[in-house]
Image 1 (cartoon, one colour):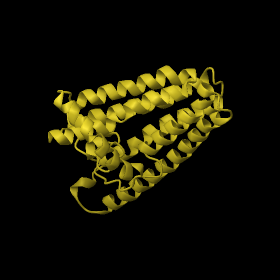
Image 2: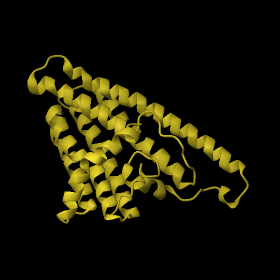
Image 3: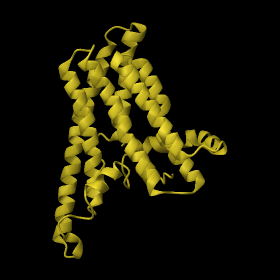
Image 4: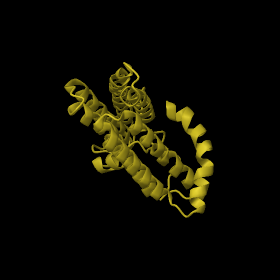
Length: 249
């Protein structure tokens, strides 16, 4: 949902920066790798210590690399399946680091097993939401649904509220730390709804496809788990904008 409206705006904002990197000989792949490394470092260094404000600042600085690399690719006029695969795969790594860092806090000094479990559910459900779309597309289904909470929503809700929650520890603002648990519960519920939406859509589309005569209705579909694992959210109309927008190597 947010992808549809926000991506075009931020792409326009970041276009001059992308052009600057290209003039300096930086490749889209390098931007993808550095961006993911920054997100992982910010999440796993700051979040487990409860430094949610500074962790969010670091993550936010690097998370826009997902838009910068795609913009660079379009400016180069080259597209590649490898670039889309790399971007989509590393998106999963970054997401896991964000929620993994929060889970480490609640499993340790945060000392809240329930919120630790909710955070782990957010991590797992986000990965499965991505997989359902990729798996459906890998067996030849269009999966014409996005869902209530996609990757952009998961990150925006979690990072914005985690950053504000960090004001309590960093700046002494009282009672604002409750925003992070609120974000986690919202993301968990939204991810569960989105998963249900995608499963129902795939089931309906599969039934329609199976009812049509033709050689493509054999058991096993168009590919094994490898196709789904590699695609992530990078398929057409998916959460990772890289594949849909011509991400290149």
